[in-house]
Image (cartoon, rainbow, N blue to C red; front, side):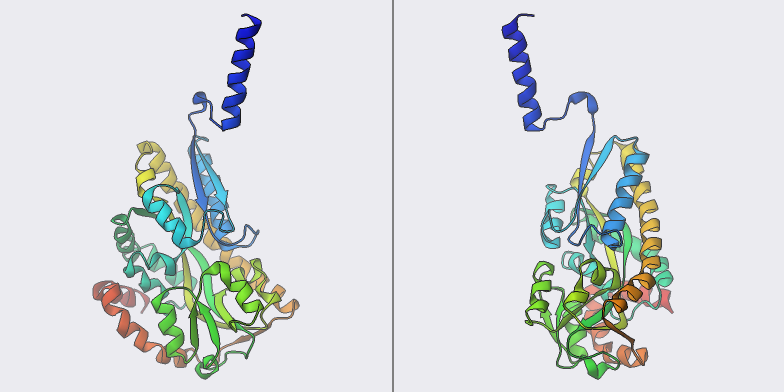
Length: 331
């Protein structure tokens, strides 16, 4: 080989490397997975993402590499959903209330005080009700690979502890841009302020809003103890976080890899739920040690009575048959 040819070959190799073009021999598929919260060790979204990555790469023998993008690196949840639907984003772990904006049947999971325990929620979501919800999303260009656990949602604010329904009255709570949450807080007498997640911390810090409602793990991983005082364990909504993939991109995978990814998601979901549940008690103690005032509500039945209009209003958008099936399953 002449010096000139060697230099030409070297220049081509450098150019290929600079462009980030993978060598054809690797035959590796990259799956980009995003979520909006932190990549903290106890963040429920991050736990699920890492578990999914480990399981997929193990079960495909490294033929699929899952790349992780926390902290809104792929956009807010609405942006990620749109990206998955059009195939520009491969996968995401998305809060149920945002998914419900695409498929209204998912509003079922956000109904206040529907589930009384994590175990009950798992049984319903892993059964017929969960399968029916999954079918709703397929027509939207998305597959549900797992119903992961964000934990029960609780109220935090800087005005007063919430012990009775009347304590919600007059307090400005950030809620997700979802009608179930807006109506839930309105029915309790609160002032619901729909707001994107990325704007919320600053809004609390500056006093634009008084507080918000999120699971304990998300309070901790996003340091909301630094800007809010009262944490009331209302357990008003079991927070489902869906592990979703782009139907368009998933369908391009070989059949054996599709099977491996689905099996990986099932294993990752089980591991994520277990870890998320185990973390709550430890995180509560840590938040108290950092100055948050933690309390329980006095009468859950009084809260359920206050939010009954929410069930009546959303029966039709959710679907009467689906709501009846869920209610029967939790009785």
